[in-house]
Image (cartoon, rainbow, N blue to C red):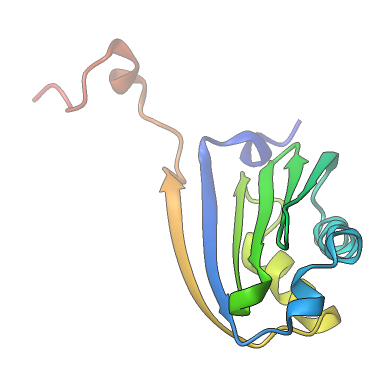
Length: 136
């Protein structure tokens, strides 16, 4: 097993989407299919999908990944949506999942926020004793 695949480290991508056609944002089946294809194409392992349609409009889609998750929440009447993806380890990149989604699906403008979570390097053994600082 590759140790870097299962590090307590990951990247989190949050995207605010605007100026998108209401019909596009209300088509849950197509959105779920495109998100799934994007995640798989970028090396993520999709364990399950949950879709929920709201009345009168809007959808929530959640992809449960072995690496963590991808979600999309839409507000068709306002032309807005929120994309969220987090992947643990270094095997796949959540920003690449979003970019592939954008390449294959018509959305308007967007603003991306990325953050790294956890630590890339394994923790020193002296931290395993519950201490947050080195003994000096």
